[in-house]
Image (cartoon, rainbow, N blue to C red):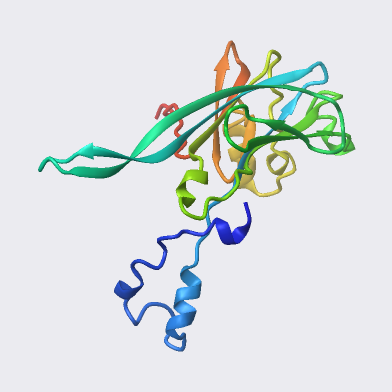
Length: 234
């Protein structure tokens, strides 16, 4: 979706309530308006490591579509409200080893697509930290829906979520900063979290993962991540 179509259509509604002293004193009112300009993201993704024997993934995409509908108000008159329709699709991804991103259409989504990028990790300084043949994989959910001039909200995918499942466990991401740290605090932190590896990183979103029998086979995007930490005995 082009940048001019991804702007917030309601962003100017509250300009009159922005105090004149907002921003720097030398800024004009037009400059403050320009600084307020905002755009919605058109993609989100996860990056992770898979072992040599991995052949593919199962990706579950969830989102909500909103449409205007009418209900009876308290006074009996019709009232326009936004109604959410939850959507869920499953996409099977097979690794090809191609240098170019593989594009997978999310069925029945009206234009949502998954971009999958693979890259073999061959850096010599990483071979001692990860198994030989490990590949870096990134999965992006991209909104390529056609814009709707009359109903721009109909082209957005709200509360988007990606779940990535693998039959073989994901490879923990090495903390190179901790492994090569000279600072004492970094070395202590690396030791303290030695048994809590990271399995993925997010792009435009955070990531959570599930461990079963000390193996991770499920990754999930999270807008508000949470984690549990054990308290050290005093």
